[in-house]
Length: 489
Image (cartoon, rainbow, N blue to C red; front, top):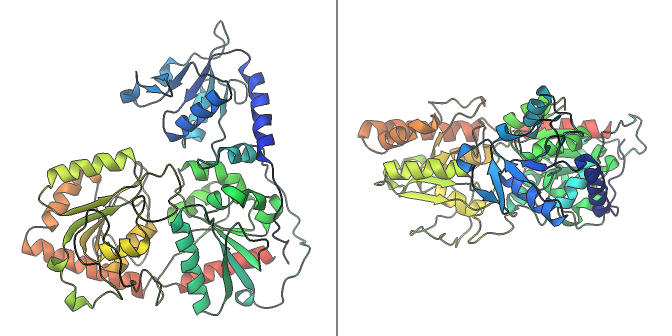
């Protein structure tokens, strides 16, 4: 049994009006301070100004930002905040950060009262601000276990399934949707792809990247307690991200939750949300990670012939025949830029290919703003080392970069601490794990002497064998089967 997945009109603008009407009462004439000068702080400050709320100043923990200006407003340190009880009531603080929960805890420990002396701004969607206000009013709901409609008496894997991703969000979520569709079809599932523009959904909905699907464009019309209860949500973001911090109530209301990362799965479970890790393992013809199309264009900055078809045999795939020494492709962040600039300065003799697009807007298409998976794979097959760097200081297993685009393509993956273990893969045997400050020494060594190159060769070959032969898609099938069974009751 399961409830229907139904589209309906939603008016998030009313939620915005409600938030700011209450916000005036919270301020009570006190000076307004935004805490956070990162991306969330930028969005919050801009939106406050648009709604005639001018912050007195902006607080940020990074001393390097002190004295700078954001949206024309001075940045200072949190130690300068005036606590409640001063002659004019102290500052009213609006927290705008992916670390909002820990920042709120810190304020409370010093006597600040939530919804009296401070609040967390609802930055639930960096692509659609209004959705943040809608989610701010969203409450966890208790569902009756007796659901209204039996959809089939067939086993779960024979039930129709729709895998959904936003048509206007990042293209790699649509690639993930299509990867799941092809894999499930190979084992006999009745499955189709869809996006938010359809008028109805067939069978059990499996939503990839729900933070984008429900918040961008017409996806809002699918957002409801009932639809969440009817769906399997596929988490794709890092536990510390702004997305996951704000979307916890959404995942708590889902019929079932799976996550593509072991770190992400642990993050949901730590919040009391039952989740299962879905290992996105290998299956034959998982294009473009298996067979590349003909005629791929070289991206800017690379001169050479782009490969096509399947990965060549091991005997032909020699370390020295790969022209790119170090490859990194990932969204831009200050931390990544700092590490890469230092590495390239220390190792100028190596042939680097680095591409870091901004993530201020969804990566809708390929070209100058993004590199699609086929092009990424083609570059990885010509790279000795694929580098994995975290966006921030939190350890994370970036599955799609490490496994799909690295190990599957017989590139040597050199990564920072991933914060988890993914059997059967072993650091030092199948990939190299090293601290950021030691990467230059490690990479330089791997790219020089004969003995080091032979060691690197053995690691990349072992990693590809295990990632393709032992990390198979059958585990993902079982996880999705369990999740669908939860939804159907």
